Amino acid sequence: MLCVIPAGILQPPFYSKHFPKSLNYGGIGMVIGHEITHGFDDRGRQYDKDGNLVKWWDDVVIHRFKERAQCIIDQYSNYTVPEIDMPVNGLQTQGENIADNGGIKEAYRAYRKYTERQQIKEKRLPGLLQFSGNQLFFINFAQVWCGVMRPQAAINRIMTGVHSPGRFRVIGTLQNMPEFSEAFHCPAGSYMNRKKRCSVW
Image (tube, rainbow, N blue to C red):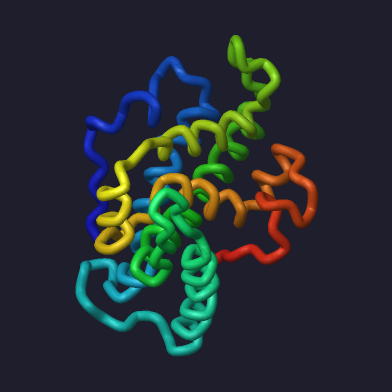
């Protein structure tokens, strides 16, 4: 499966050579992880390493994948865009949601591995001194998907788009990450620290 990341994305808020590593990993790191995970989503899993439509997973793996993907489908189907009172189509957006959930995990693990290997504690950002590197990682991930849509665009996104609206790309992904709850000290059972978490990869 071909993965293309255009050079034009290598700018804020995704990446800057002047950013702390936490912001770069939470931005472009997540995008790279997202694109890699597409090779193992509902569509990508059907193609082999050469791009041929080949069943290369056995039936047990496919069954387990579908069970885990259903959790993601159900989770996102329960989100409603309040401005238009329409639910997200979790089935239609499952591939992108799986890629978001996998990509953020890969990027966070890479960030933690980097800081541990380098044995560094990143400097705090001026004006944001209350946030740790781990928190800044998640803040930049959220900032990347920050945006506003007109109601007509939101309706079109829900009816035809394969991406969940930005707010649910953030909320859904972070609700599934215990590392987020730990970084922000979310109480157990709270909105962002759900008892039931979904994980495909």
